[in-house]
Image (spheres, rainbow, N blue to C red):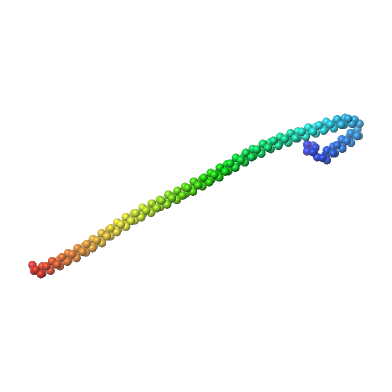
Length: 163
C-alpha cells in the first residue's frame, strides 16, 4: 500500500470506521486509542517524509528552472551573436563581391583599353602603310608625268631651236 492511499478521503473514513468498530467490539478502549495514536503518528511521519521529499523536489525543480533560464539566456546571447556574425559575414561577402566586380570591371576596362590601343596602333600602321603606298604611287605617277612632260618640253625646245 503506497502513501497515495492515505490521501484518499474514502480510505480515511473507512479506516476510522473500522477502527471505531474494532474499538467498540473489543474491550480495552485505551489500548485501541493508543494504537490509533501510534498509527496516526506513523501516518503523520509519512506525511512529513512526503512533505520533505516534495520540498526537495520543489527545490530541485527551482534549481533546474534557474539553470534552464541561464541556458535560455546563453542560448539567446549565442543566437544574437550568431545573427550579428551572419550579418557581418554577409556585409564582408557583399563587399568582396563588389570589390571583385570592380576589379573585374577594371580588368575588363584595362583589357578593352589595351585592345583598343593595339587596334589603334595597328590601324595607324596600316593607314600609314597604305598612305605611303598611295603617296609612292602618286609620286611615281607624278614623276613619270613630270618626266614625260619634261621630255616633251625638252623635245619641243629642241624642235624649236633645232638643235
